Image (tube, rainbow, N blue to C red; front, side):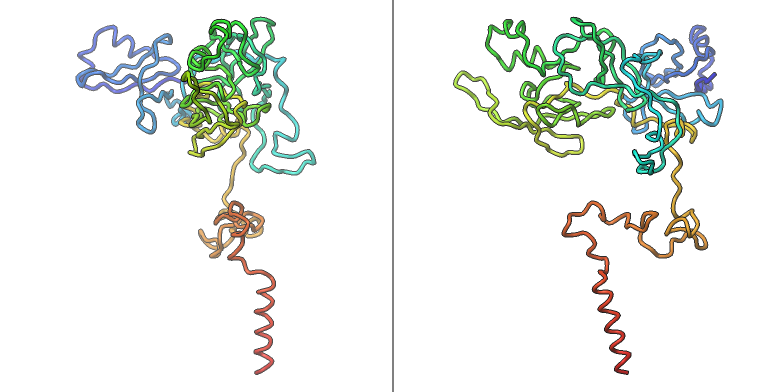
Length: 388
């Protein structure tokens, strides 16, 4: 069994009480180390499975990052680090909403059998979860459980429509737990909510009643400055932005006008949002968005620990061209680490750096000698030789 690493206490062991020694000797599957509140305190490992998670510093020094480490009983778990997700469902998924992933698509091939994505293949058996990115169904939905999805980095939530009992999967928001109730207002404002406001839509009251974590709303109903994820682009389209773990966007501006009574009315067709890359993008005011941040936000700090865990994830090894033979790659061959004074290229000879595939059309291949210029150079050399 994988067990945690215990800290050495040194001379302070004699000052510990009996209960602290019992907690220290007991070893569990994994632990989170606690930070000392005072300089004279002795750090003790939390061994209770029901203890609340404590503060622990992550790789970047952020004290809010919680990662689970393991005692190095084998070389594969020495560097293994995982985010703590003890709230995830331990059983199988809801099978009617899944389909098996098999065939050529697991090996990076297209419908004709040709490899279109390299370094794919193998991996554990998977089932694709059918996730609802449209969320057109109105009414309250009960969160049954939070599950791990092997096909994406963020967690998913299994919802049950309280009126019909139909189940669906959505991308879970950070902090969402079983028992929460979420709704979708994409089809319109419910009549009972409209009656509670006196038959008049007040943007402030409407936002206070609808802009909750996990709720899906059209863009014109979300206040400026709200953090959102699962952002759509078209009025009738699904969510296309900010769907991976820990991603989010922020509503920057809306084209509004202020009436005489002080209420603001949306007059434009687009809403400006800021993505995590810093890009400002305009999307339709009727596009969908979910309040909050995508779940599993510490996913980027994980460490696989060994090469085999990468193979379990359907990822095959990537070999450098410099390490190949001459007939396998343009950078291969030679004595020592040398690629023959050649610019970085792909295995098929295409330039791999310098913006060959990303520059605009008027800048592409300016440094490449065209066939016409090459032929002109040959003609000049021939004319010089004939004159001599």
